[in-house]
Length: 179
Image 1 (cartoon, helix red, strand yellow):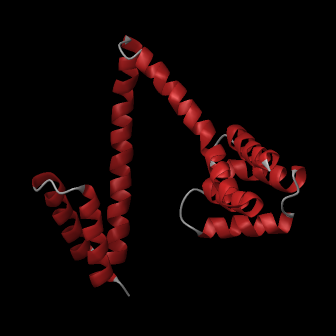
Image 2 (cartoon, one colour):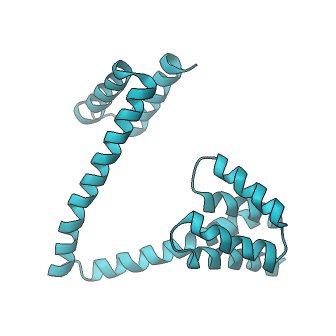
């Protein structure tokens, strides 16, 4: 049984380590491991699983890992597959954060963070703009402004936890915008 769990770990770890570009880039590598190498599924079964995974919200790599791990090794297999899927990114983040912390007083690292801040601000502004117009198109201007203004005051003026603000917006949407 331990060798099965090791195979589950290794199949997902290697696929996600070599799959540069995120979840979609790992799909062919994972298919090779699951279908060709270990023969846990057929190509048709794998294709159906990918189609189902794409229909659900969230990252595709973790959905595939949870399904394959559970299918092959039960709940423990699912946990192992999920960990193996995020392990390469986790290891790299820890290594990079360790490197950044070691050189945090370096002028080059300080300059790098000064260059990154405006980029992040622009990305957040673009995301906010897209969310606003998507909300405007689906919910209308009145609901969009009402949720935005009440959310702003709840967060900034009244210091309400973001969890409660999001829950409040969800309840508002369910009551006034639900079909």
